[in-house]
Length: 253
Length: 328
Ligand SMILES: Nc1ncnc2c1ncn2[C@@H]1O[C@H](COP(=O)(O)OP(=O)(O)OP(=O)(O)O)[C@@H](O)[C@H]1O
Ligand SMILES: [Mg+2]
Image 1: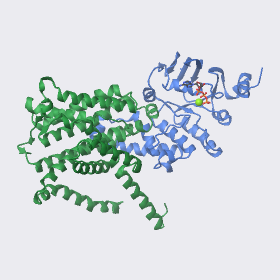
Image 2: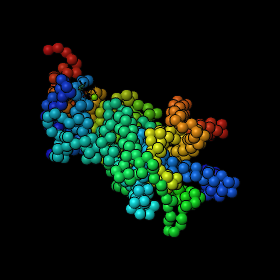
Image 3: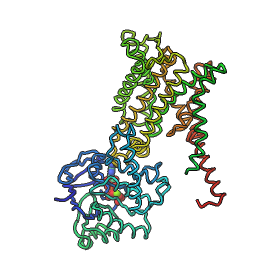
Image 4: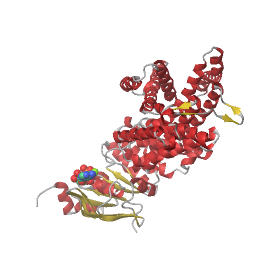
């Protein structure tokens, strides 16, 4: 059984069909990539999986259970975390606080404990701060911990989103164009980070345009064009697929 | 670090002595009215602190604060008057009732955006005010208002304003501690996350609707309790107090002092109390003056007086560090 399975997803916005009968499977422990030209429907597919939209047709299974129709916060708490194409941080909070928000669905102290500030809750908060620091170290931006997130560089903001996403201890993390805006050195560093994420036991589903990243690290690739899944397979096979080449290079018949 | 603690020790001790000695000094110098004003500062501070949780931390507006203030005041007065419930208990029950009403109001309002939330909460305040003046069976005394008693605890009578001042001090400490816990927990973090970025908060596993309801409920609890403190302080309550003007006053206090701090709430309360006292005779112009203050503060001191002071202090500290050649 695949960890995550989207079967025959269709979603329409008014007249346009953003995703049309598309399916994908993500195996546990893999790095799976979703690629496609601009406007293909990749982000829309992520939004369906993470609960922002409910697909008009089709079903989404996580560990064999239906999750389509659930709300975002429920899906996050259920073990699917994500980052955003347009960076979506808590802009007035420090880097450390951003990661600490990520812990939210895993915090053991109840609301009542929080109101009363019981010793257990205070202790947990101290541990959370330390663990948040570890997540910042994990993505390599620990020296920014006390900076307001909007003052971080673009690349650091992307990494902070990943750290925050990992803090909710997901089984799978969805990364929407994680290297967009990163420089070459940061990209090389990111490839190593991806491996460490998988080694941690977190499965990765990633949208990316950068072919070097895709071909270097992906175990499996899906190609979406105009909402339709036109190809899938190992990166080297997909690269040779005529339909994919046509979609990417444009080209006439 | 230790050095810093020492620096704070003296002012803190001084402030404590001043707060404890205040009513005796005021009595000694014959300014007994100052003690009453200090009691107002205490109860306003509680209300504004609660509002800070909702508005400052969670970013949600509530223009119907006077409604919750009324539920606390009339609730406690009626429970004591007609059900013979001892006063402190009646205050607690009334503020819990206010809290519950806050949660019930917040549930449908949770979906509303800023402007619509403003309108809905204004409507709530007005409805409560209407009920006060047209109550079933005239239980609130309608336009005539109703008289209230001073509490007594374990035989310790609080008929003197001085003893009520110390009772208020204990209440302030209790509510400040609750607010401190709220702010330094997952609650406060979830509130700030909702204020900063609702979409991301939802995506990070925060039940936005639930946490908005909690923020409203906390605000209503604080405001309700402040209302009950007010009722038993002044001895007489009437619908005139619980109008839109009161809600605007709370908002002005919070914005003037600055949000997301204790200092801001305190400065805002004291400053606006002084303003209110000096324009007491200008009835009818008060809301206008509050409005002007809000506009001036929003333009000139966007972080509020306390927020700007802290900003200045930090800038000064940075400069000093640079001058002393320390690596920043
Ligand atoms: N909420 C929405 N309402 C209307 N149309 C939408 C909405 N969301 C997405 N679309 C449309 O769906 C199509 C797919 O958009 P999507 O953002 O999923 O593309 P993408 O593959 O992520 O592209 P890119 O590489 O540019 O990020 C686009 O035509 C877009 O305009
Ligand atoms: Mg996209």
